[in-house]
Length: 267
Image (cartoon, rainbow, N blue to C red; front, side):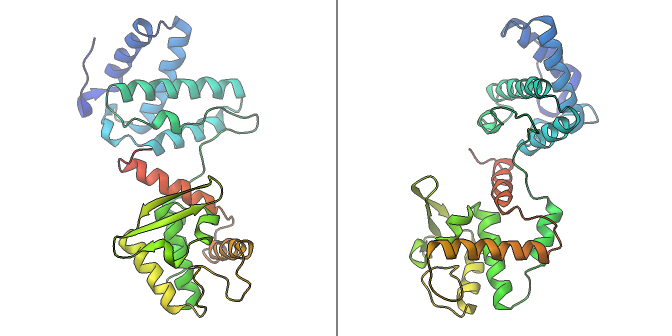
């Protein structure tokens, strides 16, 4: 079997190795093997146009971008299903060879739909910069919006989780925050990055209301539904102020997850 190591591996060498694996270990027929190699070559040529592969430079987001682009080009459901299966197969192989972290396969879509299959839509770097720029003043509103953006973009919270944040949930001394979710019906503890903590402190010091809810509406009653609507409306307004024609608050969660995985975090 051909040996390949990191940046010394070319696309041609890897596909030869992978072809041998598909035939010898997986028992693929010639046509199935040909399709899988076609998809893998397309992925690798997109990510490594010079022809030399450096596995540590391959990110999970590269797979998402590739599939999203190809699914737009190939709208047929069965073609999408075949390409997704090919990507899942090579991801499984690369993980077994310790070239990529384990867990990527589970994060790929389980199936495609009739309309348009794609990975969760992330916020681009340019869009994130626009959002940050739209909440840089020292007004109460901007400090609140900046704190909200931090908990969405850095902690990857859901809207209802941000709305339920309470002062007693934050362990300032140990740098942790307790997240309460009604969707999954369980609690979890997340680390509190310094910039998120600083953003929360600035917001808490400037806000006019003194509710134990961190992102409470300005006026009572402070019910869960009003808090949820308040957080959602704040982010909708921030997107508009940033000049973005859409509001994808939940995409900030996918963006945070993608950034964590690309830095080596496990699923």
